[in-house]
Length: 244
Image 1 (cartoon, rainbow, N blue to C red):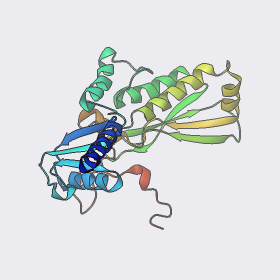
Image 2 (cartoon, rainbow, N blue to C red; image 1 turned 45 degrees about the vertical axis):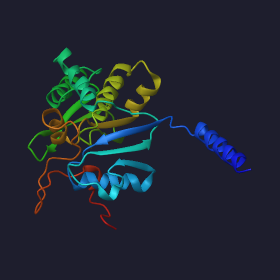
Image 3 (tube, one colour; image 1 turned 180 degrees about the vertical axis):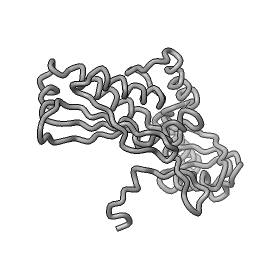
């Protein structure tokens, strides 16, 4: 009788193991560099199931410690972030001129704003609306056929310095607008009836910093009184109902 029960139990365990799958699960090895990164691991463990291998509990994680953990993940989105970023910078090697099919640095974008206005004087004009914290001019493009009492749309790109696709979109939009005016009915109507004000890069200082120092920089480059922290997130600091 006991032998039969043992056989049944063993068969049940074997069937369970066959059903248990670890497909899609990943084991990561990280070394948190400071308390902030340790807190990130704590937060991760609080919102999903994380199996810590070394150390065996998130409560034992300390800065500079090698940490191995297992987690269910569909895939690794970017296996080597540096290689992915290098590929973006490689685009500027192919041509020093402005291109709508690559990311352009700020000096190239600034020159482009002058060129696009000079090439399309009936549709585009350029003005300077101010300077950044580090003294760079902020160029604004006005697009539209001249006319009285026109309504306007304001379009800005590049709030967050590292989001290069945003300024690239603004440049592409201006290109499409001037190239299709008079050919595309919708675009022609829009530029006849509306003025578009396009600020290609809002956070110019931060954008420059992503090209010269830190590709992952997000904020502005202004100094904050009483703090060693540089920069502010411009997308969260509008003077309208602040903290209310």
